[in-house]
Length: 110
Image (cartoon, rainbow, N blue to C red; front, side, top):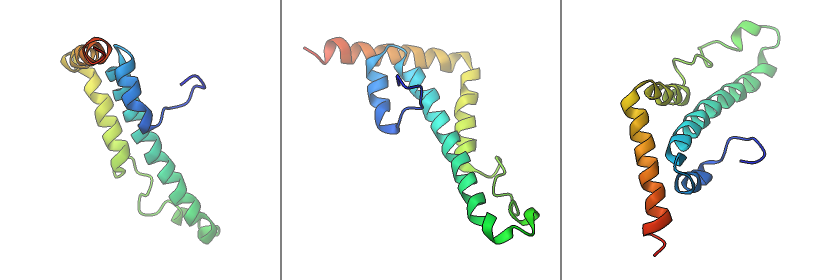
């Protein structure tokens, strides 16, 4: 993550086990991955429709292809981030992350 990009899904286990706040960070990163992939799929759909509807731009967004309420990935990412409003969930992520970190740091390395 040194080059300031969103980590890949394959990097999440290393983030979780490598830091006491890893589970918290991985949860936020996973939500952001869902949201960005949903937005990229929306842009891809727009670019597919664009050449065929240059004369009628209102048809490019017809059918609510970029409506956030109808995009599953964006809804899932927003729902995950909404869980962070609950104090009990934040404590669960912090305690779970510290537990996982300590397990992989001390117990598993015997």
